[in-house]
Amino acid sequence: MAFAAAMILCCGRAWAVGPDAACTPRFPLQTGKTDGWLGADAAYSIPQPNGADVWVFGDTLYGPRRVVRDKAPVMVHNTIGISTCGASGRWRIRYFIRKDAQGRPVSFFKPRHPHTWYWALDGFRAGDDLWITLLCVHATDKSSAMGFATCGTDLARIESPGPDPLRWKISYLPLVADGAGAYPSATAVVDGRYADIFALDERGARPLIASRAPLRGLTAPRKNLEYLARDGQWRNGFDPGDAQEVMSPGISELSIRYHPRLKQWMAVMFDPQAFSSHILLRTAPTATGPWSAGQILYTVPEMQPGDPRYDKDNFCYAAKEHPEFEHGDLVFTYVCNTLTPPKLATEMGIYFPRAVRMPMPAMVSGERSTGKP
Image (cartoon, rainbow, N blue to C red):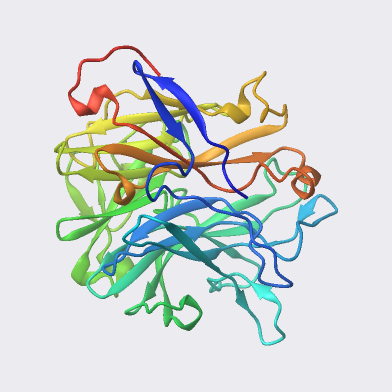
């Protein structure tokens, strides 16, 4: 499914939304008997040394067509994509859906515990290996508000990943056990000698808190994990009750990335307010802050009455930046879903990542501001 090109007026200039610019990510739906990729969320990207990108997708619809049974979409909980851009800047992506011995689609990452599944989220390269954060999730009784609850975090280690993800050697390493109330997974980034992994504290004001593990200690991540304490010191273990609030309120999915040219960190995220239509940009001198107040970066059209893509049941989430596709500008993705699951079977304009390319905002580019988005 191709994006429709559009021009948006921002900061006194017009800029394009969609795949018009060289190598802007896009995620066409692909049909197939069992390996058709028909939409997903999450969409974290991890640059690889060979110039390709690994994409991590959440709950993925598959098959020859979208199917919803008893208000539950037919899906697997995670899949992988590999994107490349040739010398001409042409975008290509291949989706990979794992299958069991009977040829049935299954989640790419297999949970360590029965009756649970993984939401695969952000990741990073460390040496020759690829690491992916895995948020453990389990179903709850039907009377609960969301129908699911979190149950810990693990790390997937992919040793020297080759071009075919279905042949990857994957090992699963425990990071934070169930019961902590905060699970490092929201975003991850290599920062010097450490992998910083941020967690949404699910209690109280729901702030973002920080943990890290030394790159040389990743093969025993639980043993080597540290958290940023209230006194500003890094301490062994993981104690959300004693952790510093790095960003408040936080959110369960975002990106935190360093921009060497700008000499600052940038966070791209949805406004944590429930069902917000605003994507925010925040900046900081270090990955752990202090973070600026969120400036509205983009207002998603799928939630704006009067826009042809609007539906009263739409909600959007999963905003995150992808710096490897930027050329002095800003590239980010988001996903829109529906509160009425049967609509997924017929509304083909939602439930896949949408990419936006726009000029770097004046608040970080150093240009004189000419207005607000």
